[in-house]
Length: 287
Image (tube, rainbow, N blue to C red; front, side):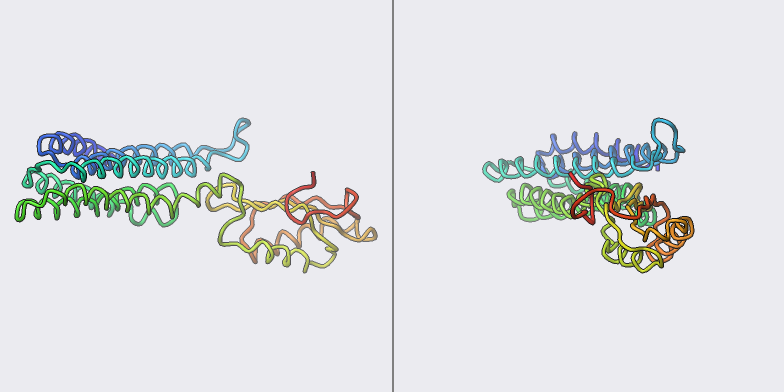
């Protein structure tokens, strides 16, 4: 992975110089994207290292969420880069300039090789981590952008189509913004303490209510402590005459939600009647 970081850094410098000398905005766009790739690699790897720290008195839930923060940072940089490229592409469409096609093709091909190497390196890792997935998508989009840059350079050499360079830049920007838009919601939802997207809260409630001794449930909070760790806390109402069985009922609930929904961390508060007057909200808390 360190090799990929250095390769992207050197490529960024080469593409910026080549883009300026050749007059290619698409090449500069690809360089900026490569720079964001390098940054995403550094951020992702640093976050992964920090996430392995155990919980302590300062971070009682542990440091795992740093990977979610890293993913959000990487998707945000994708949006910033995409918006900037849209602006530059439109300006260059209005005033097309001469582009040195061979410089674009050669540097674009080198970029494609490096981007493809990084994509292959992170392909398996990205399946189980939103942090690594953000980094993977950074590099995948850049690999596709490099393909577009090479094709654009060839068209410039063969047909001297000057508008193709800013057009490709706009296509790269559109793809970057599309990727960021469809992926950024996951990290935002997690950081907002949203319920896991692949879990049905109503089904979790049904599982709890089906446990013998449970009369009702309210004040439910269901969220992801970390990317693959779901947590639950709620109030459980039991009949007054069964308060002595609270430990057994608690154990039954924990076993049921772990087996049916994979919830391994839960905090359950028991009461014989709702602790507050009036209708209790099922989710969240009153007031």
